[in-house]
Picture 1 (tube, rainbow, N blue to C red):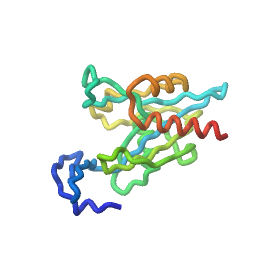
Picture 2: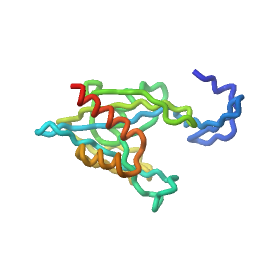
Picture 3: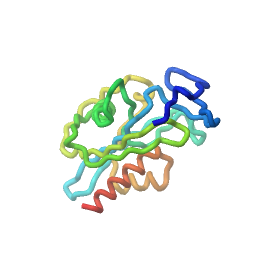
Picture 4: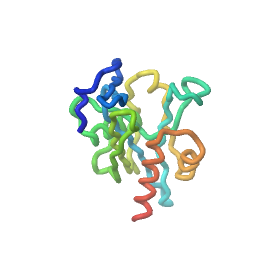
Length: 185
């Protein structure tokens, strides 16, 4: 693991720090460095799946027509102090979607790096929430959370979004992992 204490701090704010390595490489690190992405699905009576897609704003995308344009993604979130990745995913699914899940709902998982310019690991999870009751999401109350929304979408519609629309990279990654899992079983 890289020791960032040796890197030069170029900029810091309440949410992000920017560092420069001894080799001159500049990278960013979020305050709560790592994050999760959780894709939830439910099975229908014909054994097809619907996916819970979260639409949330990405305020600094050049293609945006307005600051609050929504982009499709899985449920995402960052770590709190000393939290395990799976616990973060379970908490975020409840906070952002209103589903009380447990480790028993876990279907598949993976770990990947967000980008070469960020010191961030993303823990991806796929959850089967078939038959679970939905409660009112307990969001953080921020403007970003108030604007975001969840929509159940068919496999066909999710695939169409992935192939024909801008979306967060974690959505196709988790969707194709779930498709791989489906094809292996």
